[in-house]
Amino acid sequence: MDNGLTKLLEQNIKDQVLRKIILKISANQRISPDDGLVLFESGDIGLLACLANRIKEKLYGDAVFYNRNIHIEPTNLCVFDCKFCSYSRLIRQKNDPDAWEMNEDEIIERILRFPAGSITEVHIVGGVHPKMTLKYFASLINKISAIRPQLHVKAFTAVELEYMCRKAGVSYRDGLKYLKENGLESLPGGGAEIFDETLRREICEDKCTSQQWLEIHETAHSLKIPSNATMLYGHIETFIHRIDHMERLRQLQDRTHGFNAFIPLKFRNRNNQMSAIPETPVMDDLRTYAISRIYLDNFSHIKAYWPMIGKETTRLLLNYGVDDIDGTIDDTTKIYSMAGAEEQHPVMTSAEMISLIRSSGRNPVERDTLYKPLANIGSD
Ligand code: V47
Ligand code: SF4
Figure (tube, rainbow, N blue to C red):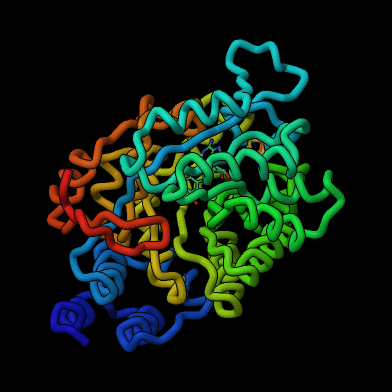
């Protein structure tokens, strides 16, 4: 154990249960769900930072990853009605001034605005529109891959995939295989929300179940399609539900090793059916990210998605186990700005990302989607 940790233990940790957990973490042993709960309930924030940082630094030293990507949200019309969602509109509201539908030409035009090589990833997610079918999306990503062969296509949450496959009458395996053949390279982590079935019924009862979400990711991994995982926190869930969520992911990751990053997503309360719930304090963000780093010992990366959590909290999180801040978004996502996130027009150039990472004493490393460091590390 390093000296800092030994000192901390000697000075502060009189509680024998907590002491045992810290010794486990220091010995690189896996902690149990009960241990995770103790950390949420009584882990001192300085101690959590120290433990999470130690894990992060053992993996990557001072490096913090970022990438150059854009988001495409083809539509915000959605057949589902999640209570926390601020950006979608029901299909019957398609004339609402805030509703949009992009056609294929508009999507391609948006990609062509970015010269080849200026971005490395396109992230495509949106509302679940009945007209945007498996075939439609296969054709779209096929065209994207043809015009920009070097661009990594990360697309479709398990929620969109469940709907597309169901409508097309194909298994998840066949649907994913077909998308892969047409250019799909990885899946984003959205739609996981919170896996506890009772809470899920309360906040998003009509979309894919937790079991379906996990099955789709497991199938993707078996087809060598890597993915991410998210957790929506800071609403009606308790610490027990957060640990249960992470435990289900940890178990799946033990079987497949197909997840790249875990992304805790803080619930933002503007303009949605859950607006009466106050947003959780920053201290809870720090605690949640640090415990994620400690608990998910088989996940390589913990990502702070800055357009959602804000630049200032992102900077703080770089000392709470986070090793990745995602991409230069170029104002292409509306999910969080419509939900009241600080970043109303989320744009950061590479130079700004580099400077944000440097300002917290870390070393910026540009990566591709699969975390391969790129040659122009730290350049503009
Ligand atoms: O699944 C919706 C969340 C997710 C709100 O994989 C909200 O690299 C907070 O998953 N407050 C979609 N969150 C975004 C997503 C994502 C983002 C960035 C990177 C990656 C990745 C994935 O946004 C949804 C939902 O959990 N969300 N509304 C809200 N009011
Ligand atoms: Fe639709 Fe996704 Fe919004 Fe739910 S979170 S209403 S599935 S866009």
